[in-house]
Length: 374
Image (tube, rainbow, N blue to C red; front, side, top):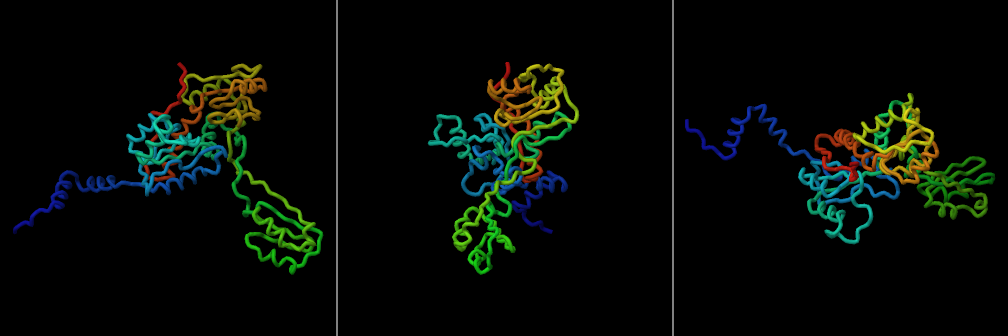
């Protein structure tokens, strides 16, 4: 019998089978499949993890750099600060999306040149088609976020945000309530009102109550008979707070620590050999600590009104520290990004569960606080 001539495809198959046993070959084929996710889908999932709406009003969060066209994401790179050395590291890993906790684009640019390092970072990201996303204060506020991590090592207790975040929408979408009480009203008089969309009207024998968005107020008043206008009362509602969500954290411990113990726990948690401490007036290292307030980064304003035995943050001004110690509050300062960077390991685990095996997540090894104690 004459064997058929080998084709290029059959020869390649033969060589692969000789090289790999069947089980290994099938595994090799499986692992060689390039898993990926669309950038818009990744950003959508990041918004589920920590909605950008939780960020402070002054912040600049979300997708900051978006390459043109469809962008597939196979590798996500986490960093606290997107500096030039960190960007070089990310590019070496063929990164598709950088999640930089601090927004590298904050103040508006009037030009993109090579003169400033932030402009160079932006240009290089665009040139390499690397997307950039920044969560910043949305990660501070979300339950299980940076401040939850920062307060976690001091023992069990009752914790809460220092200030609660507020919802961006009103219940039912209604920001105002209009009431008319103590007047005789017929349904016929209210026909123009009842025909109006996007409002809620309740009528009983003694009052009419209308729930509506602010944009409908003028139309509603105009639709009412003139005899009823004088009886109108308008109530503006406030946005409701979001439970367990907000800036900073304060914990009341089930079992108190000494100041010395709290200091040692902080050093271990932040992987720091040295740390700055301002002891409150009349306090020593053996003084009990029952309540602790924390705020990642620069926490002077967030923690200003906190009544606690100890507060922990990255940085604050000289005069803010003096104010605290004169109020009987000890202060630990660890430098700005040292109170944030350790959370990237936790974020990696959370994002691996959120994004699944389609995306490989890497934490920068180059990223570090610019200040060192020498």
